[in-house]
Image 1 (tube, rainbow, N blue to C red):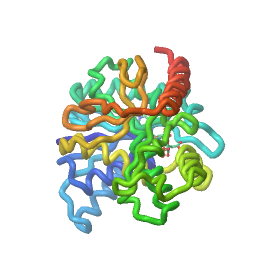
Image 2 (cartoon, protein in one colour):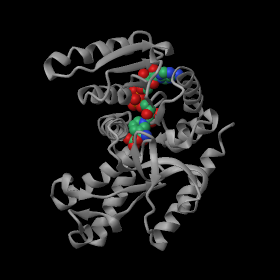
Image 3 (cartoon, helix red, strand yellow):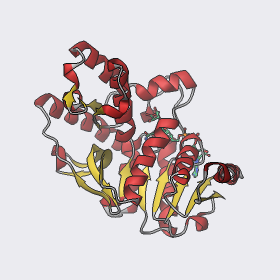
Image 4 (cartoon, rainbow, N blue to C red):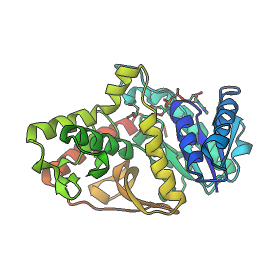
Length: 308
Ligand SMILES: NC(=O)c1ccc[n+]([C@@H]2O[C@H](COP(=O)([O-])OP(=O)(O)OC[C@H]3O[C@@H](n4cnc5c(N)ncnc54)[C@H](O)[C@@H]3O)[C@@H](O)[C@H]2O)c1
Ligand SMILES: O=C(O)C[C@H](O)C(=O)O
């Protein structure tokens, strides 16, 4: 098994570090355009092997795609992060060019790879990578819902003062401050609806905090987050590589599912060795359906800004 992570910045390096610690591959290639950075970070990571006890080999590459040859899974994190006050959508101009170029280069050397897109605005970048590459839709997966769901569970756990491990919940829709849909009605505390423990006002606050979860961290840190994004990306990679068939909300190409066509946005999918293997059809309430449609409209209008 060989895995490549493109972009050795905050999210890319954290993702690579998580992957090597879990020994999900023999080799993990970290590629960046900045001279020496991916080589330096890979060497730094490898020096933890003797301390932490793993055998995966991280390899750095300054924009040399030959080194990525034969990768089974590729994670694209290259691109600008937002600054406080910005939306993810404002990154489209620069990141579209980066994601397009990276996808082309990756597929030249790894034509069979499963590609996970992290760069923002993620739903539109996933759509762009799919349209430009023409690869099987099941091999292209956008990471957003895994992170948003982790934030949702964290805010629920904090409000209830319980362990996040006992909370189940999902966020679907677009990965944007106004487009994500925390499914409060379906969230549970080990199978018990969370509405038994929190008031409607408390649940509304949890949902609102979840939606601006990324913006809150960007304001605090000065750039966007990386620990939870790196862990959320690991969840996708691990389910694919180990064929775990986990259900994870991911941005995938919809062709009629959830009433949407020709769009990539977040829905629960089963992840295994084939990429996203099937969409899980939730029975949404009328209000949830309306929110999904509104979210799709916003994602579609962002996709309209692409020159395909
Ligand atoms: N989908 C999500 O849930 C999620 C979560 C966090 C961050 N993000 C997004 O991920 C991206 C990366 O965030 P970050 O915090 O790691 O940023 P960062 O600035 O720390 O790292 C980005 C890296 O990409 C590299 N890069 C730029 N162009 C490149 C190219 N053509 N080829 C290879 N590498 C290139 C840069 O040199 C830099 O090292 C941003 O777009 C951010 O918005 C998405
Ligand atoms: O908030 C951002 O811009 C980065 C990422 O999409 C996140 O949700 O952390």
